[in-house]
Amino acid sequence: MRRRAILGYGVAGVGAVALMLFVGWWQVDGAGGPEPVGQRPVALTEMDFRLTDHEGNAVGPETLIGRPTMAFFGFTYCPDVCPTTLSDISGWLDDLGDEAGEMNVVFITVDPERDTVETMAEYVGYFHPAIRGWTGPEEQIARVADGFHATYERVPTESGDSTMNHSASVFLFAASGRFVTMIDYHEPREFAVPKIRRALEEETEGAT
Amino acid sequence: MKEKILTGALAALLTFGGLSTPVAADSQEILVDDVWARATIGVSRPAAVYFTLRNTGGDAVKLIGFETTIAKRAEAHRLKIDANGISTMEPAGEILLRPGNDLVFEPGGLHIMLMGLQEPLVEGDSIQLDLLFDDGGRMPVNVRVRGIAARGPRN
Ligand SMILES: [Cu+2]
Image (cartoon, rainbow over all chains, first blue to last red; front, side, top):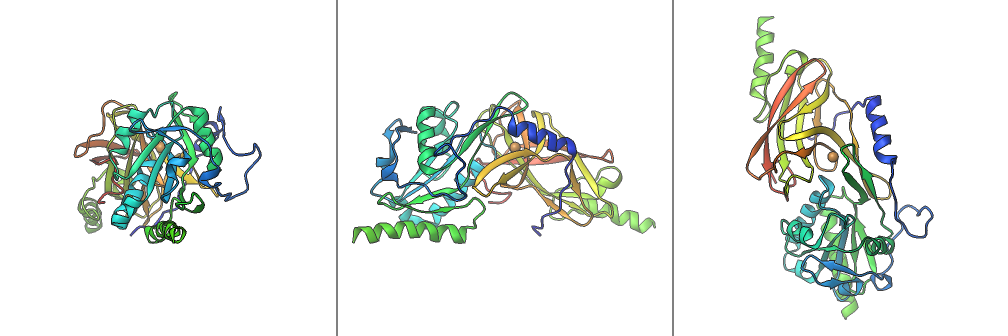
């Protein structure tokens, strides 16, 4: 029943795409050059940034050390991929049950201009209670993205608003801060949950 | 001949699962199902509408536009994830519905984005979105608003 039909596109549509994608964008990435495909984040212990969580607490990479971490980027004005990822994560956390309480789960905004602490608080309230929302000054967000080797860019829309292109993967770190793996956007849940368990198990190994 | 026309009309009325509205010309063979939208916080954020279209007719039909009274603009967008895992959203342009095929609008793929909302989309409410086809057909679709954390028409 869930077949995908072949789609046709107008030439006008392609022109609009080019305009939407290439007018006035900026990009933040690691060393200034193009990153190789699939470059991994550095360990959390090697990152350095200062943000604020949705309850107003000062947070940084050290906040995440000691428990396994699931982190991803997005923004609350995101119509499709972000609410879907947050819902997916909520579902994975439900599947994990009590184990979910042993993890840090952080949603980091790439749109701090619009995503204030209050905005993040309201937004994460619609999803699993383990999910924390982190925001902060633009340059600090850039440092986070740098450490994750994640990218984001602001894209103006025709109406004068903007939307954000950003890394859609979910990043998993062990309790030690070491990067374990990532869950791609379209990955089915039967693959996602075992990956999260792997990050949880690394914690156990490290502790024994 | 008469029977064939009747069958076409019946198919349009009966739908494949619930909702549908017959419209003029070739686009009368289009059925719609699994229609939903995500609730919004306020009116400054865009909303996304999803559904599945089935072309039960013998001819291809093009989906050329959308109209709703709840938003200033309604556009078909496509989400793409590149090899680096970066998500981007693009206008999908005109969309061809081939005969016998389903076209699925779903998270991570195609959606109708509503921009410039006149009022927030509230869970449990319904809004109307008209689908416009290249044969002049107009299909009013009743869109049920689900929660912000909804993943699909039923979950
Ligand atoms: Cu869109």
